[in-house]
Image: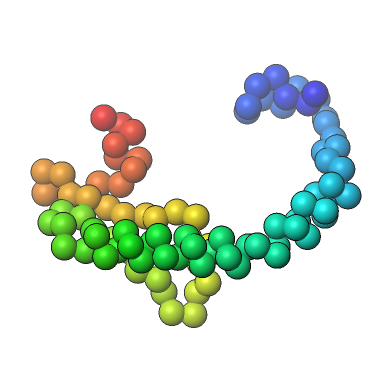
Length: 92
């Protein structure tokens, strides 16, 4: 173990992952990856549809020519006249 905690390195360590298992898992996952992305895209489109007309909510749209995984749905809301991000809420 090369770490005392999440940020403190106390000695060199190794990455001992078994790549055979990772390769096997990846080959199974890649077959359904497109399906997962398509499902997440549908959910993102539903969010956009439902959130578009809400005052104080600003959503981001896809950028042409950029591929997306739709793992996240970033959005902004306005509180007291200011746009706030997730990090702003963490300060409260």
